[in-house]
Length: 271
Image (cartoon, rainbow, N blue to C red; front, side, top):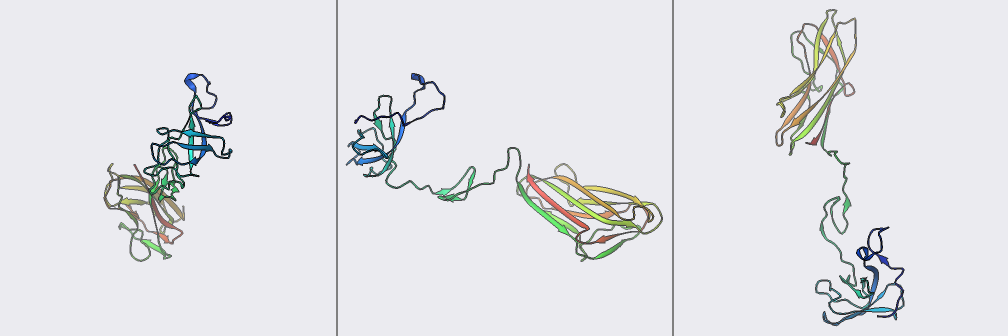
């Protein structure tokens, strides 16, 4: 081994650790193969990258490890590790070309090697959104709600304002709906409900939320009702949530059907 100042080399281990015998760590350096071995029983000569070729280290057989079946080639890069006595070894020869990983990425990465991308990782405790839904009505004008009926808010074409979701895992489904410009068309006090209704009960037996409205034509001429419900859905079950109105009392009402006045939305995340 040639005499060489190793004071500038990297010593592994944590910063600030004491340099006693129990805390010593190997010195490492990036090296280049100056003389390649003819076989695994042969020695090779390595130099520290950027240092003159006449200042190198002989690495005997057993102190270097080939990469698979490939022997080190002259000029190949390698990692040189020095023990406490300054003797050199090459734990894994890096080869004249870098190892290129392949296959699917995992953990915080997505895609495939050699060019994976960073997965969108939410903060700890935050569940990523599985799906979102949205529904609104067409511009349809005023729609009357007659006495003694159980009317529904339609989409301007005779259908319900509704969203549907079939989860593949158990999940939470937060549904929000709003109806604006509801008003009474007679002078008698009566009440009605705007509601969000699920076609089947969720895992906790919930299927609706109601928003009460009481008025006559001289008060609360135009009202706005908005409500939300958090449902706990079961995997592989088809759910449909509708927005509607119902009246348990006499009275005549009307509402304005418009994409800006009536809407229903949902978002789901895993339990």
